[in-house]
Length: 129
Image (cartoon, rainbow, N blue to C red; front, side, top):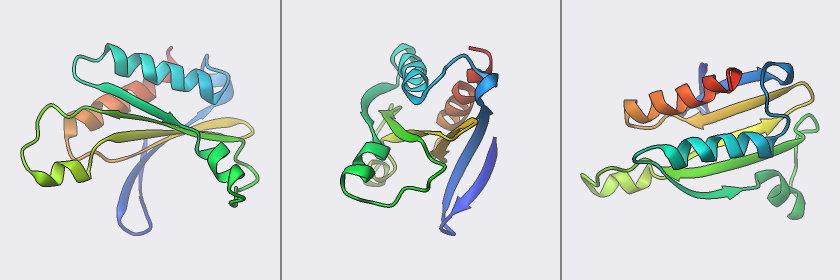
């Protein structure tokens, strides 16, 4: 995984997977993979799936031509509420983007290292699933 900073302030983690490296053949199948990971996790809870590509297309927004699909799976690990600020960094989202020859998995770095490690493990395990 590669860490970058988006818009000079948001820490984003990226994993690029060639389509021939994984079993899943489209964004919907990758979403199903992540939904299963979330639903079988002892703390995580699935919230929703957001079709970012369809939404942007419907409102006449601009989509870079190499992007074929982009959807987000939204979920939460939240085992505690230690202060008011925690609500600003929850829930979590993983973006799955399809390009011509690869899928790109991206997420903003969570404040909890354990949550980061779990999302990274799930993402990297796509190669073995």
